[in-house]
Length: 336
Image (cartoon, rainbow, N blue to C red; front, side, top):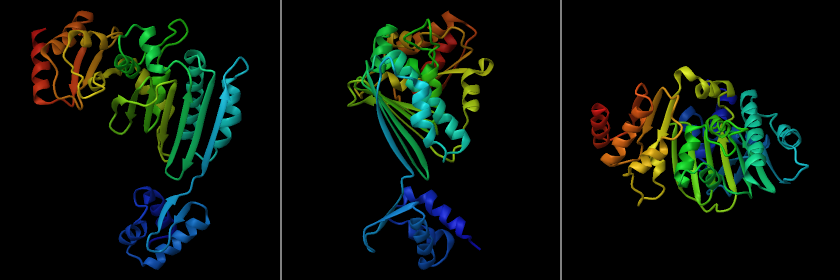
């Protein structure tokens, strides 16, 4: 027998992808009458968990927002990161599981502090949004722009290289006071994390551990948009262990970030040298060739050559490569 709680949970869990046919989908799943499913739907509506739109024939449903809070804050000498978190963030996290609330609390504090320390912003805006199957937040400042600031401060040559250094971790615009791993760690805590600044975006997807980049309309300041399921079992401890476990750490470098537009080619020794900054101390380096169809012999040769010149004991791996890239990387690895 299907319990009322099972049916209601199914409706809530699947509503976002079945807004127009959730009643039919639930009937197919549980084998009960339309009237029975509608009874449970009406209960969810009365409990303020679901909203119904339209008349009978064109009716569709959506999850009701449990939280929608936004705040614009002036950043000056009176601004306090800890007071902002305590006053405007923590009161809204009580409906989240402890592990997800901890992730949001840590991340918001880390990101706000980053804005204060690095962006030269005089104003920030954030929004917290939560419904049954998703918590997401937006954080925006009007400062220098993250990618440009990292690139210029570290002499990286391009916004692409700034994005790659963020992915690798350890890049900072203030080496005397910061490790450069904070933002990298925060990105890995969420199901998805998107950074937009200086006309470019960097998007991380936790499911397949992939990164993509491209052009963005965000020209001034930096905008971050991050999401996590309230049902996620992820913890800060789990992610930090993966990132900071020195013995088992693999430095992953997504090669596709070198090409923001379709016209960009991955073909020069300079490109290879630039993405291999700060690799000393690495035990394993893994190149991800997802969405990359072709690299030049010079690029492959320089990748292998610089790593082996840095430390001949570094283990070199690559994934998501086609036959041509496999052949080329293997060829130059055997030569050296």
